[in-house]
View 1 (cartoon, helix red, strand yellow):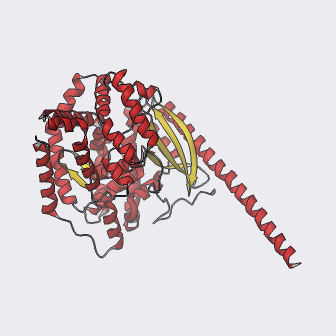
View 2 (cartoon, helix red, strand yellow):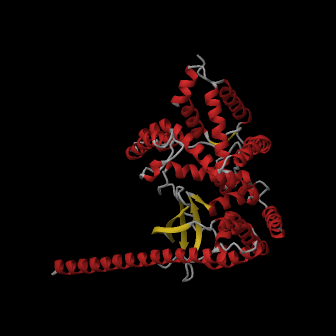
View 3 (cartoon, chains in turn brown, cyan):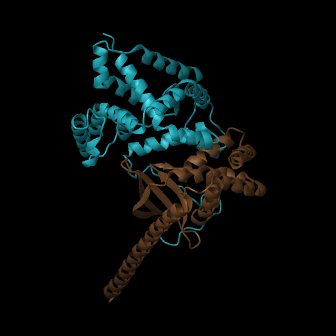
Length: 208
Length: 267
């Protein structure tokens, strides 16, 4: 009698375990498949809105900003790039920083796309790790060795958002963070110096 | 018989001198977060390194960049690529030795196949028909082998002229230089100009290769020294892993230290 109960309990436990494992794997696949689709649609959108040769620099920046806001967790990236200094920053400094950070990304990356007209992005598969869907892809530059690009995608509020791009093993977000923290650290931990540098950088490129 | 070409010895001595002279900057003691950051940056000689970086910047502005600019202006892109391939083909023995030392059998096979194909029908390595036959190019060096064997990188170093490095990669570079068959032959037959010319041409080739990247950094970075330090480390780690994911491929945690996006609903 006792044995039978135990067997039944074990069986039930096992079956629910199996069901949940199965369920989890299905959901993980949905998650990563969706992320792949998301990257493909970003690539299509980027090609149609950024690579036209008739675009002026200003127009391209404007289009890029639209893409940036719809596909990237730009505020989350900005916060992460500030690292431990985020907590030491006042509310007004934070909001200025986030505006400046977005401007920096726009002025840094928008014009890179003017050169990428002939290259094609191919998605090569994906996996999930922690909060991330990692979408592997490559850009084939003609006969050259293809460039490896990994997209680190999160799913914060029912929408996919890109959190990081890793090109040939180099994380854009991590590089940005090490640069910012170096500026702050070398100026006595004061974020005001970083803000001043960002202001200067983004003004210069916006005036051109 | 002059085995060690004098300019290299001088550079090594200078470097050693600089390291010994400056010693280490003091680590922050009271703030555990600052200490963790300091250890992660792993650049105790940052002051000296930045001074050397400034020197390199001047050298670049006055000599290296103008020379490379002329090279880019005179030689069309497809020919510069051919020069790059030729230099890469010359590095075959070093890459092969390191493939083997790392136990990478199939990559060693690729290296051998590439060498025979490209040195013959690839016209001394100027062309790369091997790539089209499925033997993709890759490079290895002794710094990477040491890393695979578990040797840590050590503190970040900015070398005069040669740029970003660390004790592990510097050791690898020196070992690679002296074990290179072409350099050994040149040293044993008193043809010291060969390794010198090769180093200069390799330098111009590398500057040409990084031309756009360096323009980009100069234009967009607010601390180019820190950017290059981070880029160098990340690239090296990727090379060491041969582009694969490994235990050292850490992911950023979007939620750490502040309120941000909720974790993804799926696991």
